[in-house]
Length: 244
Image (tube, rainbow, N blue to C red):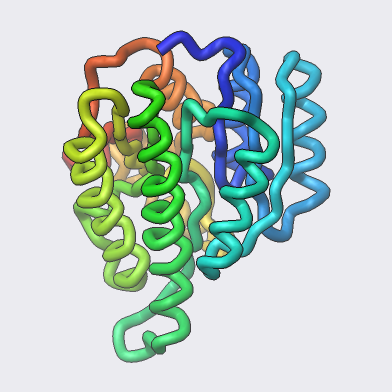
C-alpha cells in the first residue's frame, strides 16, 4: 500500500512502543491520529516529534475500558480525517494476576483494554476500509499468547483472543483489508521487575538481550509498506523465545 499522505490511527501512542511506531509512520509520510489515556505530556512530545517529520497529527484522549469512550475516539478520529488507512491496536495493560487472586474487576480491565477495544475499533474502521477497498490493521499481540506466563493468565488469555481476532478479521475483511499481528517478546524491562528477574529473562531468550521499540516499529513498517500479500499472519519479534 502506498502510504505517503495517508492516515494512521495508533492507540497507546504516547510512549514506548506506541511512540516508536508513530514516529516510524510519520517518517514514511503518514499523517497520524494518536490515542492516549493519561500520558498527556508524553503524547504531546510524540506529536511534536512527528510534526517535525512532516506529519499532520491529531490527538484523542480515551479510556479504552469503556465502550462509549471507544465510540467517541472513533468519532473524533473521523472528524479529523476523511479516511483511516491504517489502524495499529497497540494500547495494552499488563500486570501480575496470580491464580487464586484474580478478581472480576482485574479480569474485566485486562480484557476490555486488550481485546474488547481492538475488536470494536477494528469492526468500525475495518468495515469502512472494506468499503473504500483499501486498508490495513495491525494488532500488537505478545509471544505469551502461545507460551503463557503463569502469573499473568488473564493477560495471556486476552492476547490469545487477539490472535483469533486477527485471523478472523483477516478472513472477513479480505480481499481489500490486510489484518496481521506482531508478537513482541521482551522488548522493554517490565516496570517493577528486579535486576535478577531481568537477568532471567535475558538468559532464557535465545538472542540474550532485550529488544528495542524500534524493532517493533520496523515490523510495522514492513507489514504496512513492504508487502500487500500477507494477511492473517502473526509475526514474532521475540528474540527467539517461541523456539526456546
